[in-house]
Amino acid sequence: MIYSLRGKLIHVAENTAVIECGGVGYLCSITRTTLNALPSQGAQTMLYTYMNVREGAVDLFGFASLAEQNCFRRLTSVSGVGPKVALGILSELKPDELMLALVSQDVKSLTRAPGVGKKLAERILLELRDKVKNEELSEQFRQVGSVSEQISSGTGNIAEAISALVVLGYSQSEAAKAIAGQSADTSVQDLVKSALKKLAGGR
Image 1 (cartoon, helix red, strand yellow):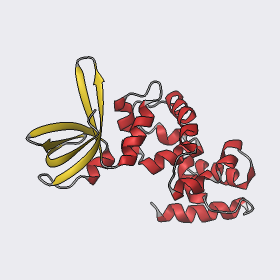
Image 2: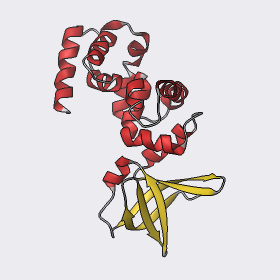
Image 3: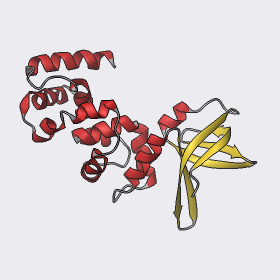
Image 4: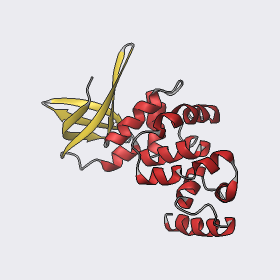
């Protein structure tokens, strides 16, 4: 198993990068996030990798961060999610954004990825949510996790405010992120106003 590559970046395309290590060029399929993180061609770089062995072919996938590699492994553990679909999801959602989608059960964000319909998105959310609950999470994820009970139950001011934001066109994970940290006793109107200010500033 090839865990990582460190060497010269000799070629970059829309969804691939070639890293030369010891005179050998390794072709890696990459996400849009990793593509944006790559240095200029000819520079030294490192990618964490995942090697997928299938009949008649060996494919190598490269990631700029360990978090992205770990998310890829989790996604491909779900029935029906192959490497290409996982790569598509991580091109749409960065690791923290994927975690937010899992906590808020955000089907809409996942279905933005090519090849992911509603049923597959629901299966991903169902199978992965419990797997990441007790892992070391970012502060952002912990904050959103604190409101996840209301999101799941659909009750309380926070849940109502998130529903209002979804009606306005935001995804559940965007809404949950904007409301995270607010008191559950705050009125729905004030929660929505505060969230809209945050969302406007981030767009």
